Length: 431
Image (tube, rainbow, N blue to C red; front, side, top):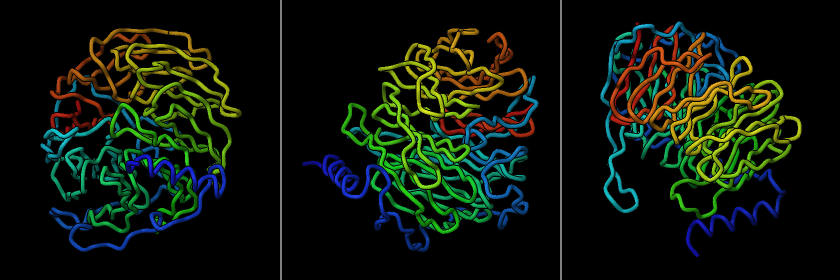
């Protein structure tokens, strides 16, 4: 019996012994002691960051900052404009690389990944990279103020709360770092990669992970409130893709995540108990979006449909097919859903019916979760272009060639765009 089969059997047995979903605390859910140098920033300059006093209450949500993936726990905040009309690069930074073996062959990981959206608080921008480092930059100048080295790649987006940074890593750790210094306050080590991005609601941190669990944690201490086994850890054709890679959506007491097994889970955010589960049809890495009385999600190649489910009972309301499957998280604004596909489709759909409002072929795949601001849509693609489209027609407004695939979601605050590429560079772009 190999390690994955053993873990699967162990988790299944625990779930049966205790309850179908919510499990008790064990050793892996207890915050680890700090170990000195590896838990401190590897580079510092200019002293601690001059961050404003935290003014956003008990949530990782703001109307004038970007604190987490997609801006709020329902994944429906896209930043603050206006977007540039004549974009130019204000500054750029070449990030460090990470060398490892990938399927037994040497591989270099660089730049930002498919979930790697930057966050901005005060005068500073925070971004984690596949090159294994977490960065804090001065937003105006691009000056590097601190850098933290993880054990492997950072694929998730950072979450800012109470002037701390929460981020997962492929070294299986969730870390809480002091945003002012880049030093670790506490960390948790789990059994598999952690691509999921955290959010905080009512002073509770919610996250998923490739270990097959949804979790709710005290953001100050790292202590576990609850965890629920959602599975998805079966051996599959895509090595390194297990459990729940989605960034959970939390809204009005409801927690949503999707899994490698092609299931969308709705849990009670208070205790992790099951509300319902629905079939998405394939491995689902795109994150759920909660909008009004519905939840929106999209699956990968084997069931390449954008889907809409009813929040009350999980009944599917509609689905719409595209080429190549989905990795991007949909954007939902003013009763319209916008999403690019791995096959190069860009869709605008009626959020109530799923009817196609417009469709265009990009000529390239896109995993970048789009941003909707004013009358524009902003996203990147595999051809290295950052695209700005008219949201009503899908026609080009402008495009900017950055070089290297753009998998990440743009972070837009006060009209400045912060985004990284797979070529290893991170950019600030403005008018």
